[in-house]
Structures are given as C-alpha cells and as structure tokens.
Image (cartoon, rainbow, N blue to C red; front, side, top):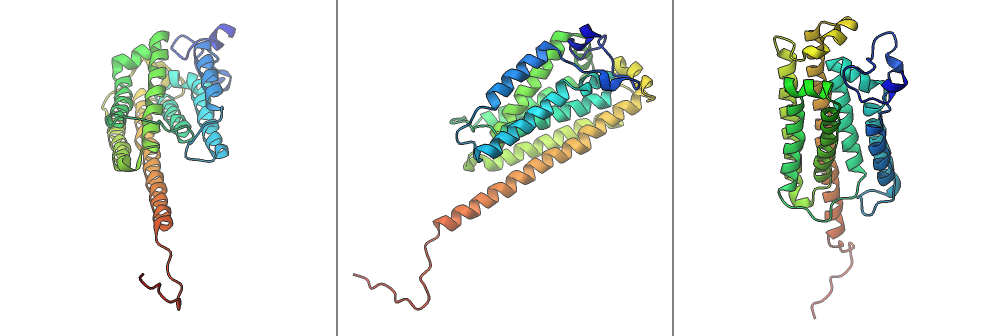
Length: 270
C-alpha cells in the first residue's frame, strides 16, 4: 500500500475497484512536486491580469484545485482503471488549465502564430493520446504517462492563456480557435462513442470489475468528451464573447463626447 501511494496512475499500481476506490489516492512525487511548484508561482500577486487581484487569485485557486483533483485524488487511479473515468480526468485537467489561465497575467508580447499553434498543440495532444498504441503506453510506462500529462497541461494552459487574454484585434481568431476545438473534440468523442469495438483492451478487466462491458465503458468516455467537454468549450466561447462585447460597450461610452445640456446655448465660434 505505501509503495502504491507514491506510484503514478498506471496499470500495476493500486487499481480503483468498487470496494475501495475511495482509498486509491495518488501521491506520486512526480506529480505532487510540480503541482506544489505551480501553486507557489500561481499564488504570487500578478500584475495586470485583467481582473482585480482577489478575483484573479480565486480563478487560480480553482484551477489548482481541479488539477489536484485530477492528478492526486482517487479519480487518477480510476482513470487507469476505466476509460470513462480517464476522460473525466482529462476534462477536469483541461478545465483546471482554463481557470488558471483566466487568473494569469497576459503575455506582454506574442506573435500572430502563437494562438493557432497553441490551439493545434492542445487539440493534437488530445487526439494523439487516444490513439490505441499511445493510450496503452500511457498506462504501462510511468515515463510516457508523466510526459503525456505534463505536455497536455502545458499545451492546454498555453492555449487558454492566448485565447482568454487575446488583444482586441485577435479576439475573433480566439473565438474561432475555441469553437474549432469544440468541433474537433466533439468529433473525437463521437468516434469513440460509435466505434464498433473496444479500442483500449488494457482497461477491459477494470471495466468488468465495475460491471461494465468494455465497449460500454468506451462509449461513456466518448460521451464525456462529446457532451460535457463540448459544453465547457461552448461556455468559454460564450463567456469570452459576452465579456469582450461588454468591454467594447464601456469603451465606447467612455469615448463618446459629452452631450450638451438641453437649453444651454451653443458656444459661438470664435
């Protein structure tokens, strides 16, 4: 048991089974130490995050809490046991990165290609992870598992940071990038949902231990990405659009000339 608690969430470590899943925590130093370092950096005061410091800190705390839930709680062991739980874990990680980005300081300078590259990397890693060979490697190799997790967290944070803090002239592109991500992750979810056979054989024993057919477990995973995951991207796009529209209206009101009071004589031209 003590050894299992400090191992990464791979096959062969403590499985999350119905009788004791709540005890299957993961306190692997390879995850705990990077999270502590991130927390130390995230909880320092930020400059010009676009939000009051109290609000920005709350967003960052919420993001850290979701990352800890995904990587340290029994959800992590469940993700190695069930495909459906794996997808819940990924969506929680992605949501945590989005919340971190909302409270983070915007980049001072960025190239025009930064946003599309970050969006492509975020989406590409999600697709790559779900190739059967790569998926199996993340379950059997601690190094691959850690590298895949770190890469997805970094890419997701970069994507959301570029999107939510996009300068005014690139906000349309940011919305398109979020909506494109909604579309292609929905496609991936649909492919997993309607696949005619299980793609992830290594998790078949875990599914059966939970009383699930392996194909049903995979279909649950696809639906999690397709529906709740899609709603998350949609909520982000809608929230950004409304926030930016509100900012634009306030800016126009501040820039409008002061109206002449009724009855006041117009100033004579000199």
